[in-house]
Amino acid sequence: MPQDLASENHRLRQELAQLLKLAQENQQILKRYQAYDLQFIGAAGFQDLIDIMFTRFAKDADLDVVTLSLLDPDYDVRRILAELNIRFGDLPNLIFLNEETELGELADRLYAPVLGPYAEPMHGTLFPEPMAAPASVAAIPLIRRHRLIGCLALGSRNRARFDPAMGTEFLEHMGSIVAISLENVINTEKLKHIGLTDPLTGINNRRYVERRLLEEIGRARRHGHALSCLYIDIDHFKRINDRIGHQAGDEVLRGVAGRIKAELRLSDALGRFGGEEFVVVLIDAGMDDAAVVAERIRQSIAETPLTLTSGAALDVTVSIGLAALDLAGKEGVDTAARRFLARADEALYQAKQGGRNRVVRSA
Image (tube, rainbow, N blue to C red; front, side, top):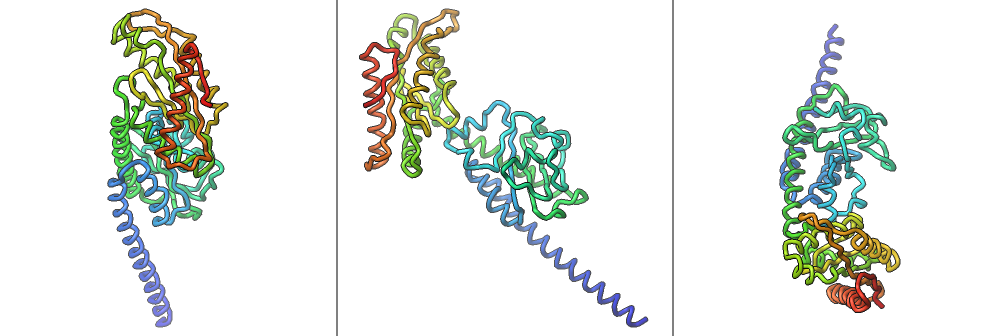
């Protein structure tokens, strides 16, 4: 009997020691997570927030993978991030969805965190190929103003890590913090975008294009990617203003900007350079590819009249000068950008001299 009591006491002491150890570990984890609350909320921008989420947080929380899926049905977020030169290809853990139904079986359950073993029908959208599927998953809804805006997915190779019986209060709190942080950084990016936007046409302004051009020239030189530039001018724009008024001229500017934008990829940069001039920076596009895009733009404007609010249909054409970046150039990036634009501008001048409504390549 005394031996049985000693054994029982030993077992209880071991259990107590394990419980104390677990409590200490959980306390440390809680402290780290509370510190991440402050980091999430204090993120300087979108890129900063996802760096915290995908790298630092994933490592400290001992997670094998973290993904963020955002509902963006109107491409608002994607468009702003693309125009601010945030490259989605460098962020495979960032997933954009057009509608909730793309979440599959999760769509009707994301009113609270969903925990359990990985199942392809339920979690495949959150961990798309070629990403390695985890063994267990916590899918945390991101909700703002009673509306689902996305899902933060935590994945572990440990099948027991996210047991369905676990309490989810902490994860719900994390989801709230991340949702608020996302709203904050997206609004911050929108404000940045406003400062780089032409108020009349809604596209980027000259300041944005010049800044973006410097970045893309540096990137093209580092990675050997092609880079091209289109300099676009509306033909006889002064006549339009003189004949039918400046308000109609503003409508023409907006209409032309919209047609140019419709022919571009999200990764390309379009800006109003002043007056009736526009500049396009085509990423990873050589002279031949850029010429195809330029001709599409020219045709889309020339072949269909613009309809003004007055109901009048107006024939408009544009002239386009095209230049491709010389990757072998050794001059500084600032000088290279000025010469790059000057070559496209010279080609535009030749298009004007040659009769307008045409595309001319620089020599």
